Structure formats: structure tokens, C-alpha cells
Image (cartoon, rainbow, N blue to C red; front, side, top):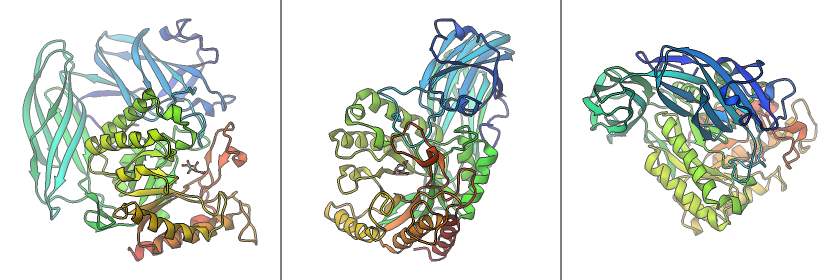
Length: 570
Ligand code: ADA
């Protein structure tokens, strides 16, 4: 299930989810033994899933193969993979279609002239790290492997629509939208083809035209701007969505958009010109029984819990989430921060300045901006998390990534999560300054937060960055669910976690220049046993829920505060 709605009425789509043949390849001998033509074993797994949840494979890091046999009536086929962890190679009937690097983004292959009949699709997924991996091996989440999100097979015909970006600006009174579409088209026919193209937004036709493409040619069509009157804005209270319908003579694509404006003005974050305090949690798209193959039903439940908590935003720490999760956020009016998995703590400078790694990170940003462009819920692009900002290379990386997203990422705020905010010249590329800080947990006591808040106020003024709202993007404490203490300073107790969060949240809420906070974290997550961070139970236990989504004391503390803050919006 790729989206919450049907993306096509005309195009035939076959979900390739379900039973696939599966084999691990611990010695990496599959390719030389011809497994790309079909697997030697018939053990099966259900796709999407991660292999680490299979009995005996929890800690398997390496290559594994998947095979699916399918029938097609033939023609031009497009294979769409939403997430293969981490490196993928794909073959159809033994012929290599290509590869992809990166666990959390969509990719596809188009194959013309496929004959009618049964075919074999083979995928090799490899979860190993090397010197150029993003993230690096030292990372605070579990390294799952497998086909973790959906795979689908689309039959393309004539001129087909591969992707759409709906671009808009709003009039000053926000009653009108000036809308245009950028369409990625492909000619799936074996001869030169001419096709009509129409685009409607809601009930309104915003474009009618035609295009001629050579066989297998790709093109980008940018429509003129159309003025839409009396629009209903998308907001957290009223998440109005519009259906976009793109049709050619033989193909179609359906999408959803919402009209909203996010900006920074007079030191505040404005959503649709109204100041907003961001009250959020950091969430990994992870569950101990499902890994990163997080089922949609449970996504909905997480969103129900997050809304019940009184949040208006979620940070997708530390990678792009799936379309379906974003569709749910779009529908429910929850704001989202999306980022790529450059998780600084693990990156030494010689890796970070490697041009291949920088390009790999840029490609991840390209994919994130390309596939998630139309989701109104995404209001923040995060370019990286906790990179050591005193490396000489960090400034250039921040510049490159922020410039790319500013140019190609639509109406969003750009930031990075800063762990060294007093030594960070990348702050100049941010629209909002976001700080990860764990005072009261990693050393120091709670009172140090007050000193930090006043010191950073002076610092931002000194470096001329005081025109930007500040967000505390991570703070928190570990608590073992069920461990209680009369002593409110006893670490790992539910009481200490709740007290720390209360202290921090009250301080942030009353501080003039702080306009949001994301608690670390929504729920406990599994981490790597090899992580030198020494995580109790191999889990990061800073969730305000446990990993099975049972609330700790802190949940109720935060809920009370978030509900109070909402009633006194600053
Ligand atoms: C960092 C990091 C998180 C998590 C957190 C922690 O700030 O960004 O992913 O590891 O620390 O729990 O220590």
C-alpha cells in the first residue's frame, strides 16, 4: 500500500507485495553463481519486511536475495521500489536493470517491450557498511536490511506521467493561489507519439495542452501559471487537501496537495501568516517486531497517540519517511520535519569531505525533494544532524545542501540539527536555528539549561543570527519503563525523565526567542549492539512511550503541558 489514495484510474498497477523467495548470501557468492536468474532455494518471506525480524536473523548484516515471479500481459513496465535497505541491485529475467544506494528513498526502473508471460524479478539487498556509507556504522539506530517498503509494477502506455510537482505562491490575502505544474513525462511507445495533457486541481482545469515525444524519450513539461480563486488553506486545524489529476491520452497520475505558507518573520515562525509554536516529538519509523517495515495501521495509531499528546509536529528523525505516513500527516494536519540520514556523531572528517560521500548526500536530498515535494505537512527540510561543525568541510557541505533545497525544495524552512551551537558557522544557512542538547542527562544538572538559554541568547546576537527563531530539536532523558523512584533525581526512573522534560518545556515555552521543541523521543527504539554508546537493553530508552507504545509517566506530564501551551499560544 503505497499511498492512502489511488494514484491511477487509467494506469494498471500491480502490487508486488506478498510472498517472495528469499535467501541470505553470507559469503556473497550469489552473483557469481547466477542467482540473478533465480534463487536456488524456495524459502519465502513476506515483502515488505526486514529480514532481521525473521527467526535467527536479528543481527544479520550482509547480502540477501529476493525473487518474485509475476505474470504480465507485456508492454512497457515500470518497477517502483519504495525502500530497499541499504544498497540494491535489480535484475529482470537475469538482465540487470540497475542499482540504488540509500535505505529510505524511492527508485524505479522502466523496461520497454516486455513480452507477455511469466517473468522473474530478482533483488539483491546489501546492508553492509563501508567507508562511504550514509549513515556510518556508528549510528544510534538498528541497521535493518531488506525490502522494507512496497514494490509495485506499473504498465505504462503512450505518453506517461512519471512524477508531478505542483508549484504555487499565494496572494497577500491568501485567497488566491498562483499554480503551475512541472510534469516528468515519458514516451512508453515504440514510436513518436503525440498526446493531449490536462491538469486539474480540485474541480478546476489549470492546463490543457499537448506534447510530442520520440519513443522512450523523457521530458519535463512546465505549465503556465493559473490563478485559483477562493482557495481553502491547509492548516493544522483545517487540513484542506485538493486532488490533482493529470491525464494524457493513455495514462494518468493522481496526487494531493494543500495550499499553505510557511515563513519566518520578525523572529517568529508563521504558518499562513499566524505565529506558531512547534510542539513536537522526534520519531523513528521503527518497531521492534517490524523494524523499518512499519505497517500503515500502526502508523495511524502512532499519529493518534501523537495528536492525543497535543503535538502539532513530528520530526522524522533521521531519514525520509514513507509516502503513506506523509499522506496521513497531510490528512490530519500534523507538521513534519524531513531529513536525510547524515548522522554526524559517526562521521569522521576525512569521510565527510570525500566528494563521493558529499554527492551521495546530495542525491539523497534530490530524492527527498523529488518524491515528497507535494506533501503540505513537510514544513522543514533538515540538511544534516549533529555534524561536527568545526571540521573545515562542514561549512561547504551545509552551503551546498541548503542551496540545493532552497532552489528545489518548495516552500519550506531549512535547518540543520546543531550539537555545537557556539561553534557553528553553518547557522548562517538556516531559516531557523535548531539545537540538540542533553543537559541534565549527558552530564550537568537541570539548572544548566537556564545558563545555556541566556548564554545562547547573547551568542546569537553576537554572531548576528538573532533574527532567526530557535527550536530545541532534541532534549530528553532515558527511563526504563516500570522503574520508579521516590528520589526525583534518580536517573533511569520514569520520575526523573518526567521531571526533566517538565523543567525543559516550561523553560523553552517561556523563553522569548525559542519557538518550538521536539522531545527526544516519541518511543524507545532498538539500537545496534555494536554501538559504542552502551545503550541499556540495546534500546535507546529516551522514549516517552516504551517500544510497544505503552506510555511512561512522562507521556502524561508532556500531554498536560502541551495542552496548556496550546491554550496560551505565544
Ligand atoms: C543525538 C542524536 C539522536 C540520539 C540522541 C541520544 O542527539 O541526534 O539520534 O542518538 O543523541 O539519545 O543520545
